Every structure is written in structure tokens, then in C-alpha cells.
Image 1 (spheres, rainbow, N blue to C red):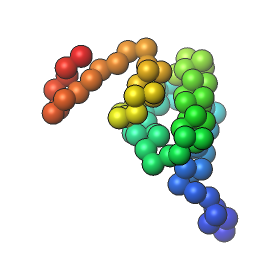
Image 2 (cartoon, rainbow, N blue to C red):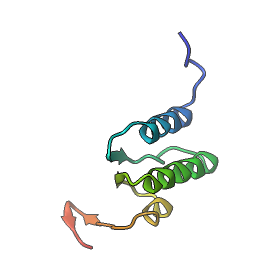
Image 3 (cartoon, helix red, strand yellow):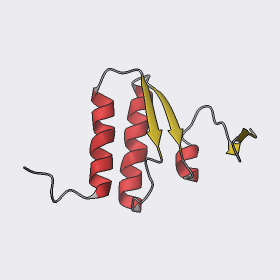
Length: 84
């Protein structure tokens, strides 16, 4: 059926590529770089930057400091409360 040899990281990249080509203006991402090696994280950063260039609103839940730095507006939570 195909796809048996696709790694988890590759599946995440494919999902992000789909998000780039769909016409939805808002994209929700939950830990998009979790469990990825540095090579795949860089690809994710570039794909997110591409979505930003397309004018998409991207809402990301992450613990990745490099990914956080890509944000224009950052809201930090601590124990369920907004701290910044």
C-alpha cells in the first residue's frame, strides 16, 4: 500500500507540506518538532517560515526554543496560566 518505510519525522514533514498547499488561513501545530533530529527540525522551521510568507496564521504548541523564536506573537503558559 506504500508508506511502510516512511519515518515518523518524514510523516511530520509530509503533513507540514500538505499544510502549505491547502488554502486554509489558520494552521494548528502541536509539537511539530518533537522527536525530530536536527536535520528534520531545520526542514520544519523552513516549512513554517514558508507558511508565514503565505500569510497563514500559525498557532504552535511547543517546547522548542528555536521554534518559539520564529513566532511574531508569543504567549507563554505556566501551569495553565498565561505568564507572558
